[in-house]
Image 1 (cartoon, rainbow, N blue to C red):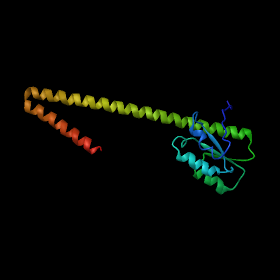
Image 2 (tube, one colour; image 1 turned 135 degrees about the vertical axis):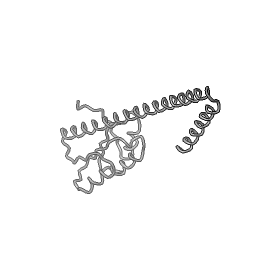
Image 3 (cartoon, rainbow, N blue to C red; image 1 turned 180 degrees about the vertical axis):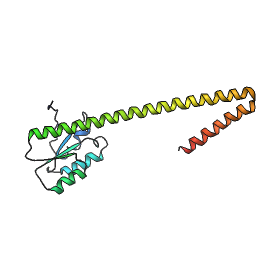
Image 4 (cartoon, rainbow, N blue to C red; image 1 turned 180 degrees about the horizontal axis):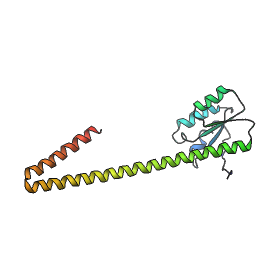
Length: 167
């Protein structure tokens, strides 16, 4: 609790590349004012890269202008800390953002699992539906072969129409 593995980028130019490499960070703390590239430019690069797009960013700055803070949030920052930093406040904010990220990641995992389950059940339903139609066609065919063949042809037409309509 309260202990984190920290990796630091020693330049603003390197900052957008570091989180794209494993292990990916759960959170990025980013200074707004850095030599070579501003924190705003770095977050734009992070948000443009699918590998780093979802990583939460907390801006750290000595600036206290409301416009700077608003700009950070517009660019996708999740929080904004003003220097001088107080360790208990930093830890509380970090803990909160990491907890939120883990919850979002878990929801994504659950949603993917549920979507896969729905897809599996839909395939099962289609198989059951196909078997049922064929069984009914065979049953009808025992009484009249023309009717059974008509049901199977109609099934094929409906399947072709449904496939074309879903494209």
